[in-house]
Length: 434
Image (cartoon, rainbow, N blue to C red; front, side):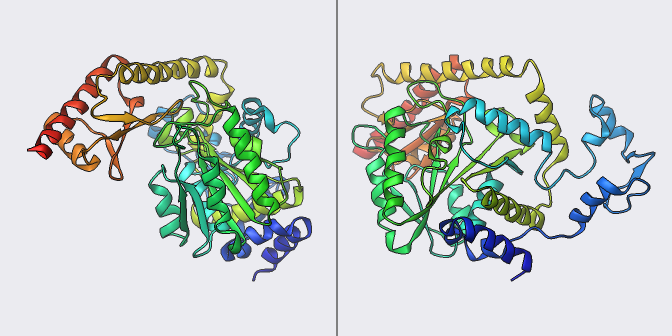
């Protein structure tokens, strides 16, 4: 094992051995090398005559660029576009995102957590979690209403074994008891990664205040029974809270609650700021020990250096400029209201009772999506029928669930959408009873 990795591991073990026990074998071996990037960073500070370290081209003390490209980006300084961004991301962006987190999640006040590290959006951030904390056959505990890509990120890539529990209770609340039972079913394993995704994809649900309190208490009880937990909040749709739900990240509630619990937040501008193609995300760790946060950051940078080297500099600059703008909150609020109106309109349409023979719907209060639970028709058959006969695209999940992304349908067209889904359902229903 590399000496730097050994030093980082000792750093973690001395402060909190439970966090060390959470690391995968790869996680224990990871480190940030003192190579070209470290030497270039030193040269940037001290090489006042010539800096011949980094692999970019310059002319007249500026990054070299093609004028035809710069013409389309004339409002930006070339130094904020063309050089490599630091592996951890632009320092100004990291600091501004941290300030944003503190403002939007008040429970983080007085808690110890790292500066966010820039990732190539959320999938990359989740992959970092998988590399750091998952060995083959380690349990990944998560609700049964989940984003399908988790299976690739944690299962196919790292060999995690999914341990699922029903997302909802019979009364339509978040199933905290099921979560706790799923965790304790793996108590003999000693550790688990627990993955939350609120607002949830596919259901569009976020816990309310009572549910959030129950979740935190349940996690504390599991930790008190001797189980080490890496609790990950996939906050892709953060901020899009429309009705009765908590209005901050669960990360803020879970951070620092027990020495055996390491809270990890994966989020980004991608969806919450409507810049999907920019691929700007963040990963943040919460721990009471600064030395552990430092070690985890260096191990994370080792992964970044060994995979993508660094994230897009232009995309980070675009997001940074948006966050600094006086118009940012005003413009974002307008988009929030638009999506909230669509969500409320969907509920209004569904609650009129016209489709009761065809489906029920799962509770939703946030995000981009909602889910229908079909009665007597297979979801995949309906999906294909809607595509072929009505030109309507939805996502089938399991045997009976259909995810509808109202985020990409105009409010005035939502009634037509559900009417067509209903028509397609009855086409298939008639066939089944003949």
